Image 1 (tube, rainbow, N blue to C red):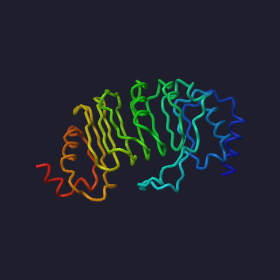
Image 2 (image 1 turned 120 degrees about the horizontal axis):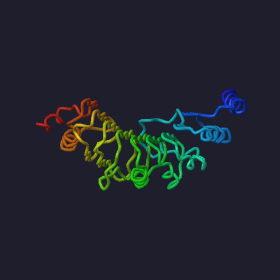
Image 3 (image 1 turned 30 degrees about the horizontal axis):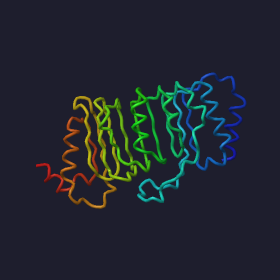
Image 4 (image 1 turned 120 degrees about the vertical axis):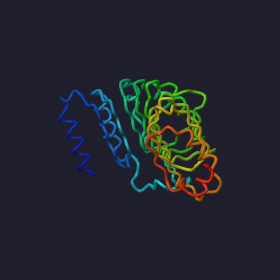
Length: 251
């Protein structure tokens, strides 16, 4: 680990002639012990007009499939303030990295945003989708404290949406109006889905309800979801959806 940080520091000190950094990605656990180096790295990239910035501070020991309040981790690092003034940023990935609202809305060129292992709220998601008019791809992995994913009051321009093992405090409810949606991935507990996408546009969907403890009576919900996604060219499902009672409910 020490050699790795020495290499990074050496690079930044000796390659100042580099004028452009299109993409910058840093993945390191326990960022508190190297916060000053991370700050320098991010500044090095933004000063050189970085277009894609990806910061992952999650710990490899965290369990992806654990569904427990103990699995909620505070952000281990905060996005530096100067990033919000970097208006030309087009892609941003933040794992276990906190950010400030409404400063995030200053990044008006963002097309691709990914959040992981951090606390999120439904209002935050709504604000980002309504403010960042160029946003096409949104991914949320292991985010927690979401009330639900209710976007029925606004039509969004998303082309790609990923909701991966997020924790909803009120209900597993997804309501989305995205006529340009091409790809949808949902992994988590089954709830109520209302996905309004154009059949001739949507191309692929991946549905994973393996966190469900047992089937119970969800035939109607599954049937409605499949009807909403009837235009997909590629549909990937889990064994939960393939149970006999599911098929019986479809006929």
